[in-house]
Image: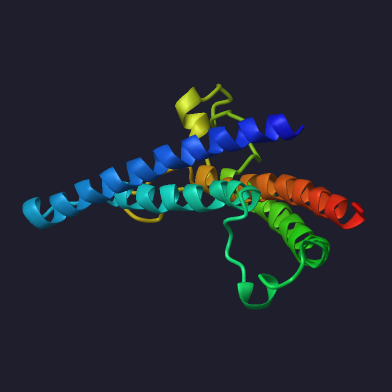
Length: 182
C-alpha cells in the first residue's frame, strides 16, 4: 500500500509540476499579449485560474504526505514525538476527516449539477451527440469567449479531497503506530 501511494504521489507531483510550468508560461504569454499587443484571452485567463485550482487541490495530498503543510510550530515543535502523534490523531479524527467527507459530498453534488447528467448524450431529435458536444455539456463560463465544461475544474475539489482523505488515513495509521509503539 505504501509503495503504491509513493508512486501515486510521484505522478501527482509530476502533474502539478507540469501544471505549474504551464501556468507560468501562460501567465507570461498573457502579460506579453496585454502590454505589447493590447490583446488578451478570457479563455486563457480562466485556464490560469483552473490550473491554479488543480495545483492547489491535487497537490494537497502530497503536501500532507511530505509533511510540508502549514502548521503552527510554536508549541508543536517542542512536543515529544508521542504527543505530536496524539495531536495528529485527534486532528485527523475530529477535524480533517469530517471536513474532507463534507467537501467530497458537496463537491460531487456540485460536479453533477455543473455537468447536467439529466440527459445522457442525446440531442433534441433523439440522435447521439458528438463526443465533443457530450464532453462540454453543462455549465460553462458566463463570460464571452470563456471556457466550456466547468464541471472539469469543479471535479478537482472532490478528487483532491479524496486523495487528501486517503493520505489522512495513512497519516492517521502512522500516528497510531507511533503512539502504541513502546
